[in-house]
Length: 166
Image (cartoon, rainbow, N blue to C red; front, side):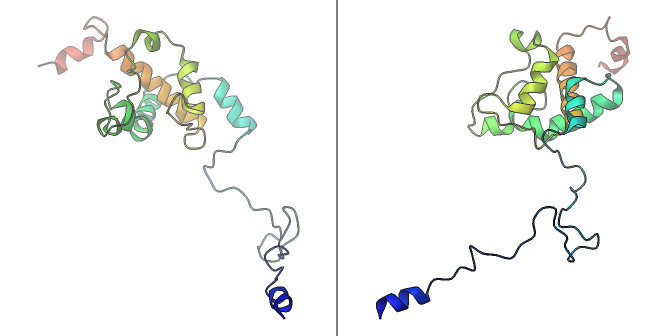
C-alpha cells in the first residue's frame, strides 16, 4: 500500500515539459519563430562589431569626454570617487580602497590596460563587460586620462582657465 502511495506521487510534468527549441516554428509570436531578437542596447559576448570597437579606441572629442564623464560618474565614482582619488562613497562605507588614478603606475599605464580592467575586472573590482558597452569603456578611459592630465596641468597648457580662476 505504501509503495502505491509513493508511486502515485511521481509526476514527470517537471522533467518532460512541452517547449520550443531555439529555431522551432512557434505560432505564439507574430513572426512565427521561437528565436527571439535581442532587446536594444544588449551587450552580447563574442560579437564581431563589439570586438572591433574593443580593439580600436575612437578619436578623443569633447562629446566622447562628456560621455566618458557621464559613464564614469555612474559606474566608477562609487569606488574611485568623482575626482579619481579612490575616495568614493563605497570606500567611505568600508569597501577596500582601489588605487588612485594618480599613482605613478597608473599614470604611465597604457589606455588599453584601463579598458581591459573595465572589461575583465581586477582584484575586488568585478567585470563591467556586460554592463558597459565597448564604446562607453573607451569613453571612460578617455575621461580617466583627462582626470590624470588635469592634476598636472599648468596655465600655459590651458590658458582659457585663466578667466575661470578667482
